[in-house]
Amino acid sequence: MNFDLSEVLTPYERLIEIEICGQKRQVPENNTILRCLQYLDTELISYAELCWNGECINCQAWIENGDKEKMVMACNTQAIEGMKIVRLADGINPD
Image (cartoon, rainbow, N blue to C red):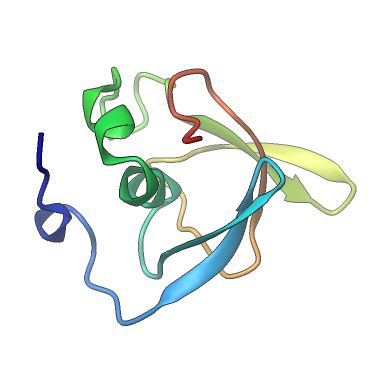
């Protein structure tokens, strides 16, 4: 199936680099982690059981925060240049 991501992504001018489970990836600036994951694997995220507003907790992500990990909701957290996502909830991890 073909998806038009222009309707769901926040407008962006460039891609930023983040690290997802040890892999460096290029994703659109000005978007949440979940939208960036959708950019990387449109079908996986589009068909996942997600509420997109933080209530279902199916989009948990753990980001590097100093020497610890911090759990965030991927649907409510902006991806920022250099962010390191160390773990993702089952069902939202793009290959």
